[in-house]
Image (cartoon, rainbow, N blue to C red):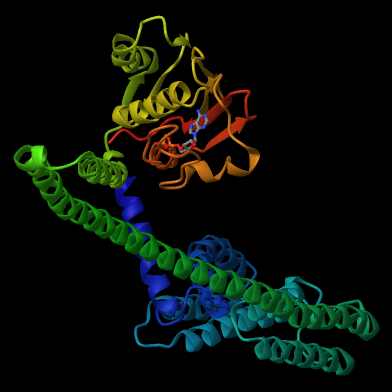
Length: 456
Ligand code: ADP
């Protein structure tokens, strides 16, 4: 079986090689016409072997010697078409079609004008339009007309074999052969229209595909460029932050020195000035640290793990509860899920939202925080609600911007970075963050985290 398969494949490959043209693009009509021609040659050889043996036997017992001769010529020519080296595809096609004509003439002459020869003529004209340029289709129609006229003349003048003359007479022949010519002409005219339509569609699709590939490549390189730029930017802000902290440290150190060494010579005003300068430097250092944190988020993204949110909140609440009176904050949460996320990032968001909920309260009010989760098909939705001062409608988007604060430091301390960091983290986790709030009525911060984050 394996051996037979091998022989069949090398036979098929050889013919396909000879009967197709490597230089024709596989999206062109000519390519598929060649493939059809090659496939016809591949299958016609074994099929005609099967047909020719009983044909030769019948021709032998009925003494139709010329039919045997034409069978043999046809077979040899097809073998030349299939295997002879150095012939162009076009010449092979011409030879192949000549064989078909020869066969149909032999059939007309020996099996009669109303026999299979007529069907052959129609078949050839269809095959010609399928495998060659459309002008050869019209040549085939002309040839068919010529052959039918010659047979008509034979019938009229009673020349030739009894089979050609037949018992039906000239009138019937004209009726039958006109139909044959009509059908050949219809196929010569219509098949190329179908082909041209298909060809245009293929070209269009091809162009669309190339355009798409081009756009995709462009997009890919833009994304890569963006990643690169982002990395550079992160590196840049990292370096700058480090450099900026150095002079700040100097300001604080010298202020301390000033206070220690000359403190007793300075009046209260000077002490206040030193305090403002030190506090400013401290806050600036805090802002720089926050900025550093912000630029670090992109790099943290690679460490996705399973995170248990319940124990994470317990962990966050520990220092808050031990610092203040344990009863001072009421926090409610239960049955929070385990999710795929970057642990340190999840901790940052929850910590930011919880501490904000505790911080932005009217004086003397006991903070109440409620944390809940809702499962959706593709993501988790979390809500952190507080009973604090709330946020005006017009600021509910702005609060997520870098350094955006709604209150002065005298009222509520802070750097304006917490929500910007939370937003960046949520976006890294394929989610969104937003707030619903009414001034005086508390705020609820919502955020979503995409499920099935890749673990890297
Ligand atoms: P910070 O708290 O350091 O100022 P954030 O980015 O966390 O910075 O918050 C930005 C601003 O949004 C805050 O200054 C505050 O005005 C407002 N805000 C944040 N959380 C709340 C909250 N739970 N209730 C009321 N206002 C809030």
